[in-house]
Length: 77
Image (cartoon, rainbow, N blue to C red; front, side, top):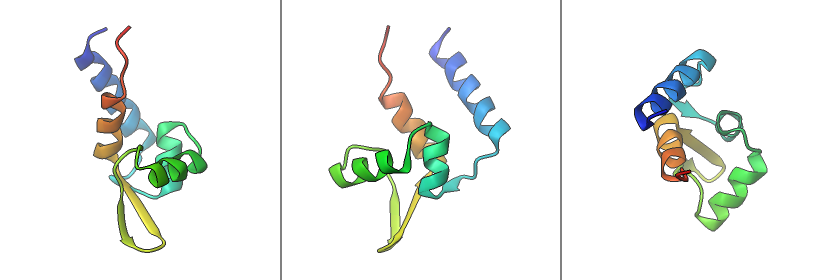
């Protein structure tokens, strides 16, 4: 399966689950298949996906950033 095929599959899966373009930490965690604690830990270590923090207690993730982060984290087999 090519890189383009994988991206097409991911796009289809995203659209099928109807995740919004801008997500809460809970939505982003569900989208990535991880826990909210995982995302929180990675925010503290500055090692996770990019996020926005428009107010001190508000965190949001953009779907395109999550997909890009997944692509950067790929390991060639």
